[in-house]
Image 1 (tube, rainbow, N blue to C red):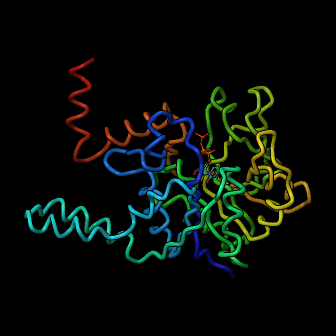
Image 2: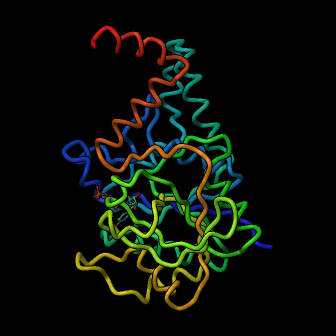
Image 3: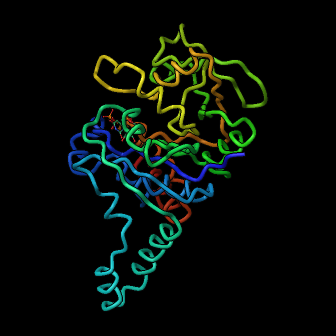
Length: 291
Ligand code: UTP
């Protein structure tokens, strides 16, 4: 039985929905409380037992490399100035990265999420892998990607993460047509991008966390780019389904904290800030004062 040892994290998108700040701070580095979104993703991967992360970078945005590498000079400075608390924060971050092996691949042009994943094909080889987009966080007891891995271990087929949404929100997402096979587990029939409410095949939307098998690379090579010239993962999965391949969907346990556009990011930031053990109580008091 195959296990999941590697995660691909594409961060080579243009973050256009976060302009103007994304000119200098790409969306994966926007904060949630006091940590960048990407750190939550790395923590989720590590807590799921995955040891290798492949980042797909754009030629201009290599910030993640700076974030990961030890800051020896800063450490020295903090020691000299006896800034114990800051030093502790820095050491904790370094500890998070210690047991993970990182690789980096450049996507020369932002030609879609599927095109980004394809850039890691040579590094992945014949093994199944996890893929996490850098703008979807899940608050849960058991990390979302770990829940998907558990499903993969029994079915050995691609597994998509699904989240139930209120009807009025569904037309902004990739929505699945499904056949239920067990509690929270579905066979996917088709993915419909941004359906009209009345045409939505279900109220389950796809969240950017996947377990994929290397077969996906053939389909990413095979599909035509969309009208914007992009190679999209959902289209490759749809072609797989059309050719009779099996893809599962799992309605994970937890709360989806979306960070892909400004308003959803604001909500996620506020939710986590208000529930933060250190900052939450004072923030709640402050909200009462200003209301
Ligand atoms: P998104 O479509 O949400 O990201 O891609 P984006 O294109 O950066 O966002 P907007 O619409 O312009 O605001 C989902 C994930 O795929 C990556 C993104 O960085 C994000 O993690 N991606 C997307 C790439 O790595 N390359 C691409 O060409 C497109």
